[in-house]
Length: 247
Image (cartoon, rainbow, N blue to C red; front, top):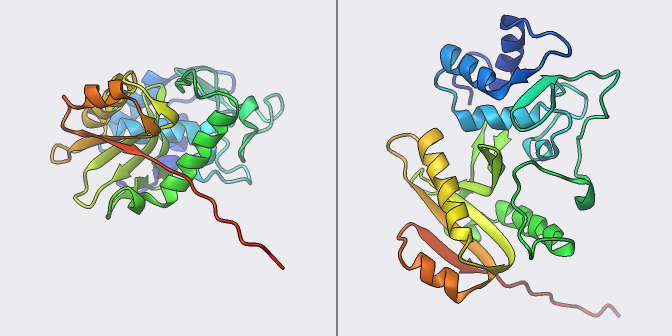
């Protein structure tokens, strides 16, 4: 549900008119955030960042936000994590509408560990998509974060991305970090940074933020590190396949 009379997507177009942004002109992320903070203070930084990706034709993560394949969401071209310009259909590459080959995707800020490359990186995306649709397997009442056309898959926090941002049955935020292979203690700093960003920039004062780390195997170092943290839980996942012979 929109916080104002217009959706955030439409407000971006109002911003372009209000700031008189011309074709080829570079606009800084900070300037965009400042405009929304002045004109529409109830819209959160995370919502603005997610829309900037959704509306950027060359942002790989836009596919997670239900992009209109007819071009209605083709507004910006992302120069880097801090700079944008208007999309130029005559000279810019074709917009991204659907999932590309993993080898072709380079997402600014995505932290790829030593284990998460090649096939394992692809498996993590499969695990992410499966869990996003089946969050009740983690705990009852857990649901994917949704706001207007933005979902909690690859939710932007600064210039990085949360694997899954969820809401629990008490309307509190749950930051979920996935490791397709072994989870090491270094992931603790990563998830705590994401949780702090959500708490500072996105959550209401009454909302709590906690974290969940899911890996195929939890290392002893990670288990030890999390023993000193009361708001991060650890899960190991198992995949199984059954076969039925067709006569």
